[in-house]
Amino acid sequence: MIETNTRQADVPEACKVLINNQGTAPGMLFEKGGTTIISMPGVPYEMKGVMEDHVLPWIRERVTVPSVVHKTIMTQGVPESYLAARLRNWEEGLPDCIKLAYLPRPGIVRLRLTITGECAGDSEQILKVNIDKLQKIISKHIFGFDEISLEESLGKLLYEKELTLATAESCTGGNIARLITRIPGSSRYFTGSVIAYSNSIKVKVLGVPEEYLNTFGAVRQEVVEKMVTGVREHFDTDVAIATSGIAGPDGGTDEKPVGTVWISVLYRDRIYSHRYLFGGTRERINTQASYTSMQLLRQLILGLI
Image 1 (cartoon, rainbow, N blue to C red):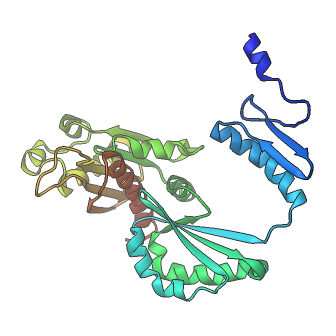
Image 2 (image 1 turned 90 degrees about the vertical axis):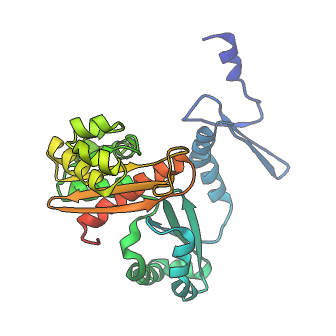
């Protein structure tokens, strides 16, 4: 260990050391004259670790805070503004002790319900009643609760139903497969993927007729449906996803502007395909197409489409 590393271990004698389990820079807690100062490591995930391991427990021992209960409903498939319009009456009917926040990110909108004060003691029943009402309005778009990811929700469904999945990706470039394989244990249901970025791979590997590409181009329903059946046959799976689109910033036309994406999902003997027009940057279009593809497959398996 070099001398610089050794000196980094020095801390002021007056502090209480807060061990950093994520790195080497410790947190430090100083108390003097009724004032407490806490110094945290600068790296965000290290700071978060010290906060959760030491600072928050220290605060809870000394400070009485109001009861706060959060419940997050995860949705996909409806933009924030449209979702707010559909839920206006439901939101107006919420008890005064519940606050609703819309927390959007590309392809996903989280609805966070917060209960404070005296109602917190009855939060379980209050949340159940109001979430039951919500599900009657947008059940098709809810994929889980409390920050579960869409890829985890899909993975649980595939595992419970003993289904295997393969993907054929053009415009998403393997992002769907990347998201799915982030989940530990995904090898139990995910078989493989073909990144059919070029037309030659669509033809040679997935069996898309060359005349389809010459006649329609790659971004068409006929093409994406051949991709989804081709990848299912290639990997011998129960379900499949296929995407083909124009992620930009170039390549768009009046008929097929940037953001046009065809998605096809297959569940045994059923195929569902839909054309979307996503907005934003190339990365945002990819993200929205990936999440929409996984949600469509969930909906098909559950009989919601």
